[in-house]
Length: 369
Image (cartoon, rainbow, N blue to C red; front, side, top):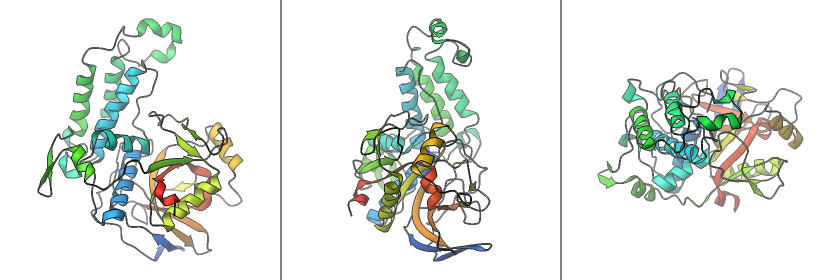
């Protein structure tokens, strides 16, 4: 997504449990904490959706088997960006080519293409002399390459024209062999996905490896909470990064928060998509609302409709805590490296979550307890 920070070395170990975490005069007492894998660093790439959701699936595997995996984010990037490019061309250019995405993208990639461990592909950015995922050059090149498949000379100046004026600028048909050139470009920046690889002494394909992870890919659902659609129904969230058009189930916000609590209390983590452009202190590692603001369903809708509130980040919720005054918080793993007083971990107040959540992604069995 659009929020990225300078790179810091990747964490190497599973996050440790702690009953009390202090930051200057503020302290947090942990109520529950579910084991998760190490904090990663998306660096200069808009791929929080990828890092957070693979972190979520790693936590699911850890919950079910006790085994820690490091799944490959760039495998997902490679497959998802090609899927996005194909969608763009099938939509005759009336779609979006974006670094951003959602949890649905990772689920779709694993379901369709499989997955591989981190060690089976080159390190992010290493093909271009950078040890981290840096898309500042890569993604503009990808946008140009994909748009040329549909528009004569690419899409750079099309916003100056009406729909009727754009018609002569469109290719009569997609450029021949456009998929080959786009795939080659993706491979040159993030690495080619392996057809086979060896892991722990056994040979796999990405699909056969995915089958060994013990994940039932039909178990995962998305929940949201907005009043421009009826509660108790599925709808596609109208957000630029939700190009796969996968629906979420709409419920009142208090019910959604209760479902987060139910999942965490039952030992399940939750992937979270929402807004971090407001009172989200990177320096303190704490997200809370200003004093006096009481989030409501109406306030959520007003900020969504006015674009004050956006869907710009995805993270992993894996625990609950309270501060010194007993105020409830969620413990969240980010993907900006081990920054801040909590080394890449953030404390998000329950009221912040109530106002700023776009959707959650979780195992439906967590709600059946």
